Image (cartoon, rainbow over all chains, first blue to last red; front, side, top):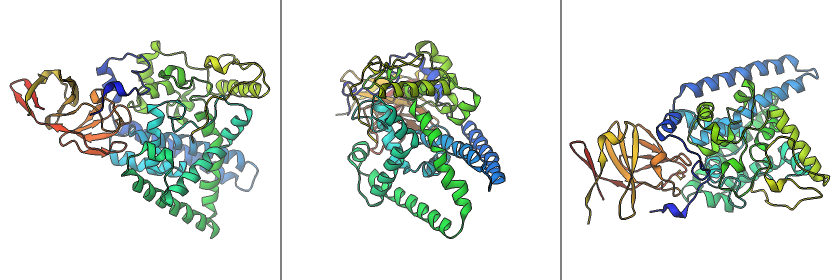
Length: 344
Length: 103
Ligand code: FES
């Protein structure tokens, strides 16, 4: 039987957050309705932005339209893949698993691989060599920012992992985060994904160009927005801390941002209580906000400050940000020491 | 040799909920009140050493609070990843309002 002393996961307990247990259980309650409403809104947003792409085909306006459509495809798609990997957004398990498969297909990560790798991101949030979802080296410089936001690094990782799973080769990290019985299931899932990707490629080659315009190109054009959202979850914050309050960032955003990002702007809250579904995070925030650091300013302001910091770091200038939270060792002048190497 | 141990009263556990019971010998358990009656399992999840006491009971399923692995509390079966090793279960008996588990 495991012992309690052997193990400290990064969550509300390791971060010293207090909450009434009955209240926590209420917040964890699962319903299908909020998740289905979210799905309906996503479908509507895709339909409207897709109609704009259709209407602008053949003009230069098709590119901004496709970036918007791609952003609407990728940011909620990524969020739903993440939420369903946790198994929290729906009460019905079949609904959860169906959405997990569809959105992970768009995200290009085999669903069980996604779920298992994400466990270590919660057990060891932002812990060097333990968190298997640290996507960039820290501290980040401008080159690192460009690579991250382009999505090249993530794409390389996804393709490599999918190919390896397909041929039944499992990376060290995958073996570490998985149980033996999971590996053949991952290989099977990866083969199914690869077969469908191949089918799509053949269909496009045979003249089904709508797949190119409405699936493949927007998928890649939506990636930078998805990466920008993901970037500010932990960038500039403390590695190896048991406290989520030091390693993780929440930020303010408007109603559209909360829709697009499925409330993941409450990112501290999510890491503290991963069992709380996305639709209950605003309520959870009201419950514990007096124990949390002030959320960082809005999405654009936070992005601007991060960009400004990474440029100044590359120029060996002072890296103190104006208002976003930074771990003390992130504030330097005249250069910096590498701390963490990315794990994916 | 097994023994019946008193773990609390039925009113201590809300419907669709659980309590933690720590035995004086150091072992820890989870005792559930479900739509199908009272059940008991080991206290720690089999995936990583996270206690289930803050988990969510959905019908007869316990969901682990750390990574949301799921188990059927009636037989301990691991239902979904990341949990894949079954939980050990223990017989439960009620004497009036008093709950006992056999460990
Ligand atoms: S510790 Fe319970 S599912 Fe991971």
